[in-house]
Image 1 (cartoon, rainbow, N blue to C red):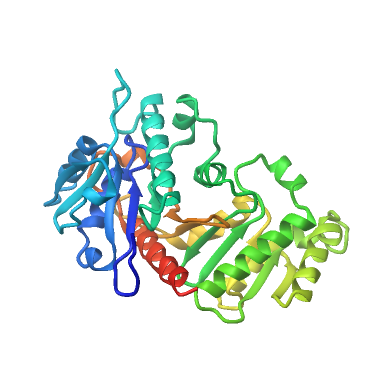
Image 2 (cartoon, rainbow, N blue to C red):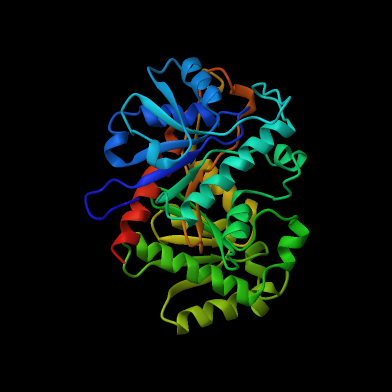
Length: 349
C-alpha cells in the first residue's frame, strides 16, 4: 500500500479479455520508459498469456507469477502477475469470443476489487472486456462500471470519460436508447452533475464550469420536440446552481461538445451513452489512412462515486488486431497516469 508522500502507489492492472488486446497493451505500458518511476505496477490475469503477449509485441520483458501483491518485486523489465488459472478445458484463441475468456476477465476484475477494498493495493486500472464473453460465462453485467458498483455496494455512480481537457460524464450508459430516455430524471441528473463537479475539483479545477446536454434535438425547442428539458433537466440544473455549482444548460447536444472542445466547459453531462461517447472517440481515436488501421487510441474511463480508484482504457478488445503485436498502449498509459493523479489527490484530502 501507499505509505505516504513520496511512495509510489501500488496499482493493479487487470488484463481484460485474454483473447483481445488487453494483455498486449498492459505489457506495452509496463515497458514504457519511466513508468516504474510513477507507480508500482502488477497485472492480474494469467501469467502464461501475459508472457505470450509480451513476446508477440517483441518486448524485452519477463513474467513472474505471484499470488499476493506483497510478493511483487516491481522490477523494471519484469511483469509481476497475480496468476489466475484458466477454467479446465478452456481454450483461448486471439480474436475469438468464449466463455473461458469471459470468465478469466471477470475473475481478474473481481480479484482487483477485493484487493482494493482490503487495502492491499491502492488503485485499479482495467483492460478492455467483451460483454458477450462475460455473459456467456454466466456473469450478467453490462460493463466494468456495473461490476465495480455491485461489488463495492455503490448506489450513486457514473462513468466519466477524460482526454486532456475534454471530459464527459453520463446520466445512463449500458441500457437501450428507449430505456435511456426514461432514465432522464431530475434526481439522477442532479447526482451526475454533483459527481462531475466533485471530480473536476479533485483534478485541481477550483470553480469548474459544467455544460449539461439536452436530451432532444435543440434541447426540445421550448417543448416542441419533447419536455424532458423542462420537467427534469432544467430543474436539476437550477438546484445544482443553488448548491453553488457553476452549471450551464440544457445546451443543445449538437453545440455542447464543440463548445467544450473550444475550452468553454471543463466538463459535459451527456444524457446517454452514445451522446457522450461519439464526440469523445472522434477526438481520441487517430486513424492512419495509409495503413488502414488505428495508429493511436487515447481516452480514459473513470468510475466516479466508488470507494476505490478505478480507471480504464476507453476502447474495446479490438479482436481484429489481437495477437498481431500492433496495439496502441496510449490509452492504457493515460489510464495509469490518471489513476496515479487521482490517488495523489485522494492522499491529500
